[in-house]
Figure 1 (cartoon, protein in one colour):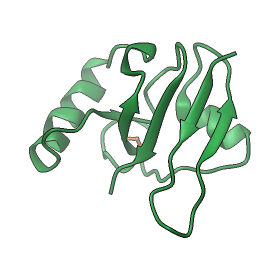
Figure 2 (cartoon, helix red, strand yellow):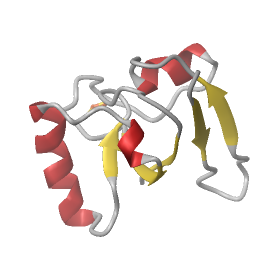
Figure 3 (cartoon, helix red, strand yellow):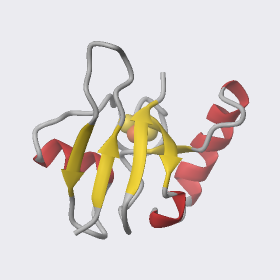
Figure 4 (spheres, helix red, strand yellow):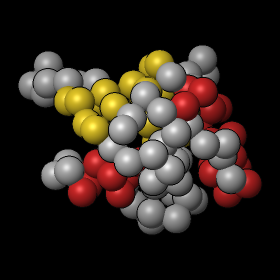
Length: 101
Ligand code: FES
């Protein structure tokens, strides 16, 4: 089972490690384990569920055309970051991320 590390995004939070099922959507897996990530449409178009990949980007599914289009817009305001959408990305192995504000 892959492990996913959710890094704290504020001093009030702690890092959280999740054991997840391979091939599943990140948002769904984390929700199943009791943590609801920031989100909006859950369809890949609003960008509310954006996350920054800090490590293990090769262990994620390739972005669909819808996700790729949304990420392209987000990269304009978040240059230098590896951005994915938690409602679209599928887990293929271990990685580390945090919600991107
Ligand atoms: S929740 Fe809207 S793009 Fe993921």
